[in-house]
Amino acid sequence: MTRIGIQYLAAAASVLAFAVVVLGAFVRLTDAGLGCPDWPGCYGQIGVPESGSVPGDYERPLERGKAWKEMIHRYFAGTLGLVIAVLGFWAWRRRHQPGESATLPLFLVALVVFQAALGMWTVTLLLKPLVVTAHLLGGMATLALLWWVALRRGGWWLSAREASPAWRKAALIALVVVIAQIALGGWTSANYAALACPEFPACYQGQWWPPTNFGEAFTLWHGLGIDYEGGVLTHPARTAIHLTHRLGAVVTLLVVGTVAVALMRARTGRPTVRMGGALALLVLAQVGLGIANVIFGLPLAVAVAHNALAAALLVALVTLNHMLRPVGPAA
Image (cartoon, rainbow, N blue to C red):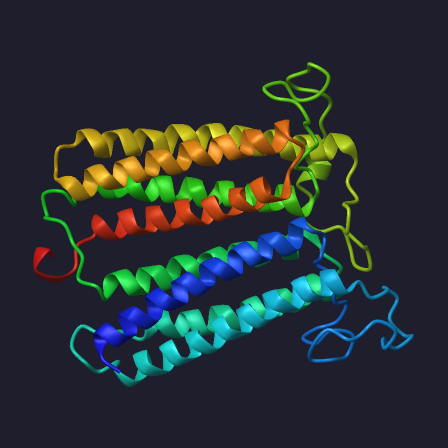
């Protein structure tokens, strides 16, 4: 496979990874994470069993709708794992070619194996929030790194003048802020705290800052054998998580918005202006979807779109960081 072939394979894998992330959000938001109480099969079968054919040693009754959602997500994730394995193999084969490196593709192979383990633990540890959040972050990391591989082999660069250290620092800070906000969003969802504050801009019964319990809210490990479906935290703890996510949204809006406006005003060419406009639209839409989730009571379509837009914003910032770190002649 040629360098261009690896680029296109990584780009296709990125699209598939985006689909896996969105499907994972759909599974989580429809409470289908334990639709199959075992792994990798479903009630001991490779597919979803027929009603009435489930062995009696499973505590959870079969809900075929939820089971199919979970298994479709697993099928997509398994396909992605195979594609990444092929990508790693060909990158390793080409590792001695000028300008080639197999380090990141092989790291992606290891990452997707770890992701599979997190998927298993998500089920076997009964939706433990730390594992669910780590699984989300692993999926986002897989998407971001696949897209980075595709970009670095695409030869897309800007001039050295545009790739100044100040721009690189700003882009990297924005990326880190978005990653932190995605982690907070995952923690909010995994602890069923999305509606802990059912009002906006206030939180609860007109209060902007009702009783909270940050100690309980951010205790990462609560022991084994606990079924976390529906959440186990007290309302003050969930409120603390929700408010933290709201504050994170404000920080994200300010940081990414500042970078976006600066890009649009930089007069360094159409690519930066377009990227600034894209970032502005994405972050404004993301904040709008977050507010809509609260006002309308977490409608499924809006909640899934909120997760999808978080992934899109991550991809956009990965693209910006690539643009400001030239490859090829501009380097």
